[in-house]
Structure formats: structure tokens, C-alpha cells
Length: 126
Image (tube, rainbow, N blue to C red):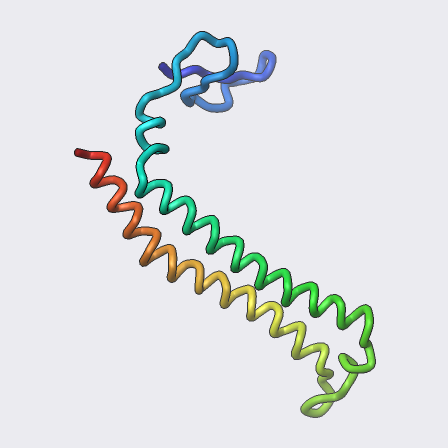
């Protein structure tokens, strides 16, 4: 059963299945079937773990750079390759590193995560 959620007299925001406490609706057994599927649990676990690892790597690089700005300005002011400072190149590295992590995640999503998703769809179609 679809329920339309509204805020006051405003237009409907979305038409989705909503189950709240005390609404008298039973949980959708299709959602329970998906949530209980071991392939779905593997997909969620792997994707979450991988996301946290990449997030941690980005935080280390970013806050390491910010820490250098705060505590070792002289190092970052060191001239490298003419008029550019080491800080400029390190800042560029932080930006490029973020793009690299995005590419790494996309590559993993297009291989392992897509494969698990397709496997999940096949197993649920049975």
C-alpha cells in the first residue's frame, strides 16, 4: 500500500511505502526478504567497509595537510621548481588524491558491487 506523506497543506512530497509506529500497517515482506538475503548483507557490508577505508584515507591526507599548514609553515613555504612552494604542490596532491579515490571507488563499484547487485537480483527473482 502506498502512502503519500505531506507537510501541512503543502503538496505531496513523495509516494512511498511508509511504515511508522502505530500506523497499523505490517512491514513489507519483500523488504524483509531482501534484507535477510546473504548476498544483500555481503553487498552492504563490503560497500560500507570500503567506503569507510577510502574516507579514512582521505581524512588522513586532508588533515595531514591542514596539520602541516598549522604547525610547519616553513616547510610548506620551501620553494620547489622556481616560484612555486612545496605547499602548492601538496595542496594539488590533496585535490588529485580525492579524484583518485573517487576513481578507485567507481572501479570497485563497476566490478565487484555491480556483480553482487546482479547476483542479488537473480537470487530474488527465483
